[in-house]
Amino acid sequence: MTQAAFGALVGVSQQAIGNLVGRGILDTSVPGHQLLQTYCSHLREQAAGRATNGELDLATERAGLAKAQREKIEMQNAVTRSELAPVALIEEVLGRAGSKIAGIFDAIPGGVRRRVPSLPADEIKNIAAEIARVRNIVAGMSLADLRSDGEEGDDDQTPEEEFLE
Image 1 (cartoon, rainbow, N blue to C red):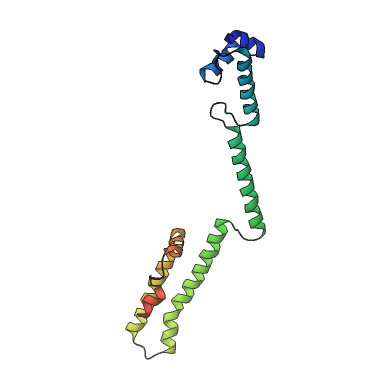
Image 2 (image 1 turned 135 degrees about the horizontal axis):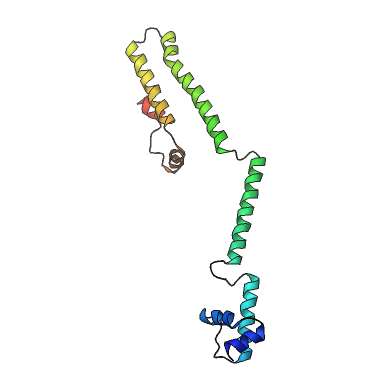
């Protein structure tokens, strides 16, 4: 059966059949009934979303969309349950908490000086230097630092352990 005759049989142009032959979907060297079965099978696969037309794979696209919708709903539910908060809000809260903690840390050397007046000024400076060192470590922390802390072993010393040595 010729491409033109088969195209007329199924109601498409000879060029459309030639395109299918060129892509290896149809083989015009087989009998007409087998060609028709192959063509119908191809149409069923396309309708079911399993066959692709060019770059678009409908089944994969639908699955991706469904996954994105599921993730969006899961995130909305987590926000509703107060399990998630916007990053900007978390940054603001942490920034304010850090400022308050820094103020408390800055008051420690003066409090030590008032409570222990006999303590030499050099020791008060050492205390202030340690507080500044720890404050700078915390101020320089990032999300990557927090993630890597959870992966490290217990062999690493905390700033408190370093200070006590």
